[in-house]
Length: 457
Ligand code: GDP
Image (cartoon, rainbow, N blue to C red):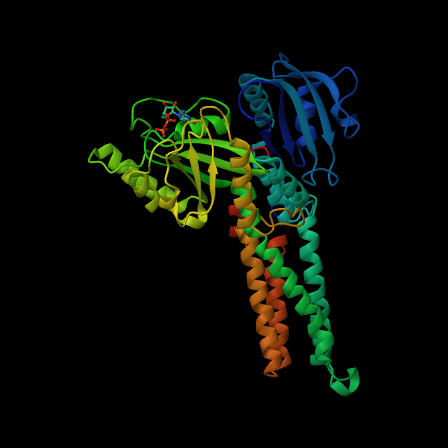
């Protein structure tokens, strides 16, 4: 095995902050600290584990670099499983850069993205599903997404996967006994005993794979598009929903030409709210492009809020906007409910989900919020589920591969295929599950996973 180097990185985000943290991991981490840290209390070699020590970092000329707190966490009981050092310094870009340089001069190497967590995985401190959850916790865009990621980091998903693979291993052991020894020695193979637990596992794997529909929404959020002809009040609605005035409200028709996006959280789901360009049948090239984009966005959005002006009759531009939308993922927002209503709802036939609001006077917004959440809940039958949820497509695909192998085994038992074939299917299912926890994940996939991480994690 090649000698392991000692890595160093800034663990806190760029910019100014009260505290910045530089982190080292590897066999030379404590020695590197020893060369640059001066404390009245003790020398780094004698520092107690997991205790913060106040001291000075000094450069090669013994000049003060910063007053810091340093802590060492000796392997194997550390995040990476190696000796880890953290230096808590002042949180400025230059001071962090100087401290990083100091450790690079002592022989540490710059850590790659996710290298600390990769080392934790390689040393068995975390399995792969847990390691992936680290970045999910960091990137979570809603409290609910964060809870799901934290549960995965805590091993919730991994325990499910190990439970499935445990059952499959039991079946494989039973089968192998009947392959290795004649039936008159180990008794007749009882297919019910073999298959019953596997049917249950396959069903549970199916449910877990299906939770990806919700997991994807929790992780990536949903795109809600605000669509409608000019002047119906789209920008006003966006502002009203956000409670701030970032979109420009204007009296002139056709001025909201570019899409504006805002992020918010609705019922625990991250939502990207997009104000599309006004939909209008026009020769203006800018607007034609806008309409084209609106059409594309309407088809890719998870939900369209189609705004119409309730104070006037529907016109051709409204009908054009309606044509762009799929009724099942469209919520009609009848705006300007503060004015006398002229809108002929017969023209909205086929679009069953409707809410009346006044964006200008903040009326009906609670009902609108509820209608959006209802749509989300309908969209995913698991909306209230806080159990084990998968958020990675990779995990879903591995589960589906495992299910395919088990289904093949079920079919083979009907056709009385040789036992070796059944054992092969079981091994394939185990291999698929192992790709989730990392036992059987190819190196290039591991590289890909950790390259998505930030440096210092
Ligand atoms: P957009 O072109 O669809 O984005 O429409 P705007 O949000 O720019 O609004 C167009 C006009 O309608 C502005 O004069 C708004 O003040 C007005 N407006 C928007 N919502 C309401 C509403 O609920 N009631 C009334 N009375 N006027 C509104």
